[in-house]
Image 1 (cartoon, helix red, strand yellow):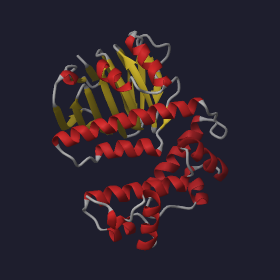
Image 2 (image 1 turned 135 degrees about the vertical axis):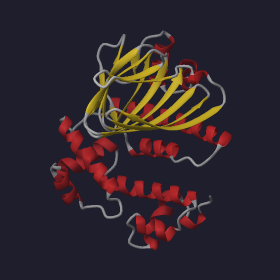
Image 3 (image 1 turned 180 degrees about the horizontal axis):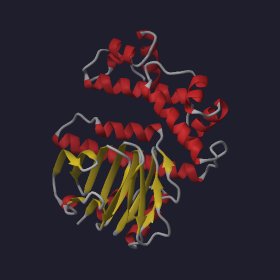
Image 4 (image 1 turned 90 degrees about the vertical axis):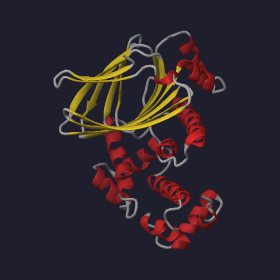
Length: 324
């Protein structure tokens, strides 16, 4: 069976081949499936015992899907939008990943429900065959080595008892995978390097979490409002609101937004926005489809000079020096 999605009410079932990860070489697929309650669009890449899967689900109405898997896999799960519950045989409790949360899981016989509370769900996963993950993680930090030891013993485990928030470095790494323009062997090499980078960032985020305490975010409502504020900034990147306006739009007081945002994303709201703008600008310049002036205008910079100065401060070179 491998991995299976079901909806008994609508008699819907979709299975993914468990032998995919054992195939050699590099394979890339994109598919769109009409399902009884909406549409599923996905991209996947398979290589070296690794599967990268990005999916978008658009629904006619909120619903739930049952899922089940019987393959021995390590899964880096990034829930970009929507809510997913994970129940693993051998684990003491289930996990529910809400929007903008991530965790790392190992298991052999898992099941759960995908709760699609909104009409749109976006998910990004990297799955490793057991041997592939152990080969990559053997030189990791202590937390990663302890996780690997549990895998060797065959013990189902989550890397952390608490799901963490997807910060900007993690989001940028995911975006670079989804927007990769290389092909064939270069693409395979690029995706492998980004997979390792994402694992390093994820392991480090858990280490940082273990050494920190939450001072300002006291409830799930606070988390939800701060993630909403982040998403609103991203959607309005060319003309962002002030912090006062953003707090009002998000339905949270300015002090809690300011402090909570930094606690959740490790930087202030407008530092996050600045870094996001510049990373998007760099990607656009590398693609070579737009000029620096057009990019600066689209991202909300007041002048080309202002954009150039900010770009050089972050990357050490001017926009004109970026080589495609």
